[in-house]
Image 1 (cartoon, rainbow, N blue to C red):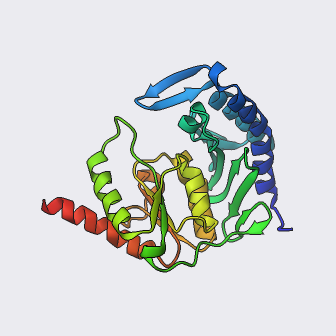
Image 2: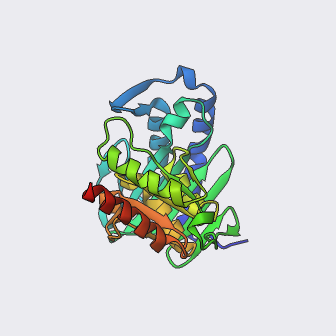
Length: 270
């Protein structure tokens, strides 16, 4: 069995504590209170309750650490070098429609660098975890990105910008380029799980623009610790700040980067 550090154990225990409430509410989704944060952007009572549980559990274990929470925002801690980045329910729209594909995502940031991450799919009981320098694991099995080296054999995941989000026409150019060159494209509705699946070798790559830090923080570390590469869609290094993410195995990151850049260039020429 892979050895778990104290900090990863804290994160796993917090995810396990919040999960039963989500599973219960998923079975009673028609009774949940739902409000809108923006076009196609919802928050449910399940999100809020899961976030309260996660915050309480993490704060109990490490009371000095700060938080960046999807619903509650920034909570400063007395230890300004450490911050939890938490998404209590990644895949809320799936959750609301009874689609069994969502996850809890927890990352730990130390001096602005992600050093630990946990993504938990409570319906499948799949626990993805990673620590900087310690590798990435699915339950107790070491994860490694896919070894496929040809775009023509690659399965690529993506996220489609919601109604009201910018860059939709640019996204369609990217999608057309990927569809033309890869074996298939999947859009399952949880960026955290998309990144975890790249780390596990289920997808060869994933891209999506304009995500939030809580969507991607844990998954970025997992892909890198599983041997993959993560950058901005244009190749930059400020992924967490911009939210424009391109993640892929070590063979296909550069070809995907070039493919998306070519789509941008074609768009600029027309």
